[in-house]
Amino acid sequence: MSAILYHGEPNGPSLTVLAALFEKNVDAALERIDLRAGERHSDKVPHALEVDQSIEGEGPVLVVDGTAMTDSVFLACYLDEVGSGPALRPAAPYARWQMMAWCRYVIERLAPAASYVGLQASPPATVPEGIVSLDLADRWREATAGRFDQAKVKDSRAKIVQAADKIEAQLADGRQWLMGDFGIADLETYAWLAGMPPLVPEAFRGRALTREWLGRVKARPSVVRALGLASVSTPERVWAPGPEINRWG
Amino acid sequence: MTDVTLYHWEPNANSGKPMLALMEKGVAFDSHYLDLLNFDQHKPDYLAINPLGTIPAMTHGDLVLTESTAIMEYVDEAFPGPRLMPDDPVDQWRVRWWMKFMDQWLGPSFSMIGWSVFVGPSVRQKDPAELEAAIARIPMPERRVSWRKAISGSFSAEEMAESQRRVALGITYLEQALGEREWLASDRYSLADINGFNLAYALPLSQPHLSNDQLTPNIMRWVRAIYARPATRRCWALGKTDLAKRASLLEAELA
Image (cartoon, rainbow over the protein chains, first blue to last red):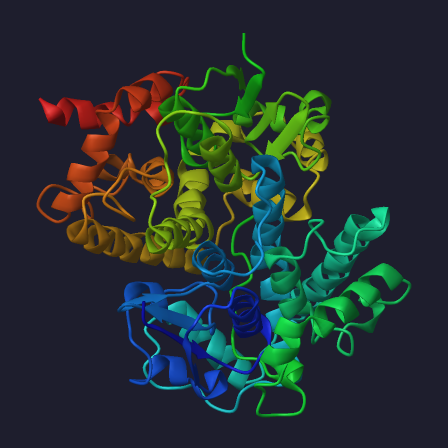
């Protein structure tokens, strides 16, 4: 198997996949790309429908034997399947359903919200050339022009608070990790939330379990190693347009 | 006897996904039909099962499951019967990629059009006070907004045009993928096909200028092949409205 992971700064979906790769001891060449400069749309990265139309937005691309794959949760599922480290998903069907439903909530509700709030704090300077997806290009245009809809900002901030609430409730029985054992749910949730404490402080106030859990994930050797690949001192502040906020329901 | 109950609406979109997965696996289940147009999904009996009031939901013994795509993966893993996930990890990734693409990008566009032309007009003639009370019972704020828009027919021209753009583009992507392999995500019938059929079965009727034997032969081959499966026939026979009947066009064209 020959694998190349094209990744951005260790934040958001790039962080999930880098850490999952290290957790599972999967051998892959690591190629850093500048997501904020739009390098995912350049010739540096192989293009396929699944890359150009990934609704995750500016996430990493894992190329295995010529197949270019995207979308961090599913890349992590792939790595879990082929790698050698401890399982990152529960084995029992119901526990696995809980994990997949949790991750669906994260990618559908939390990720667009975190990305919107993060982008507003540090919008990219220019819209890159070569974006195939019109709706992703539109999110770039809005962000670079500083056009952030106030209702969406408010709703996004509320969704960060809601996510912290959900985490706090999940950890209330004393568990260390969201699904019991450490896994993809921890990585994906952490990856989108890591940059939120300074931007949405109210979400973390009075939620000690959530703050402690953030600290535990950050100290995980795979996450430490992924964060060590950062080219800046605060990778959690680096955002490129992510998934869109639901247009419908 | 079965310890599985599925709470669903029509064999269509999200409801049809776990229905068809259960049928393909040969899992017996109690079918609990919720009339979406009568707001059954927001009534106390159902909210006791799924407090969010979204359809479908499934119970398996004491376990409660929601989120149609996640339910399908559970059905595939928890019960014997033919596997609905391919063995190859890259193919598994592709199944999930397509399901997300349909659930979060293409599906909502189909859905906006469907609500505008079918759901909205179907409930609009009800008593306004009754409708307002029904909306007030919806637990999720996002859904309250959706229902208000559907009932009042207040989707903007831009929103509808964007949905139509995505449907047209999505059709070309489906056609492209189905030109590369027999089934959507692998060489084997999978959850991605079940998911996709629930969106695409009515295409020849709802988007005849975009999807037909000349323009999209691979989509037509694919939806006919899925509709010819015994499980699909049994599943679509559970439909009670004109929505599910749209599949019969595939049968007529088989002859």
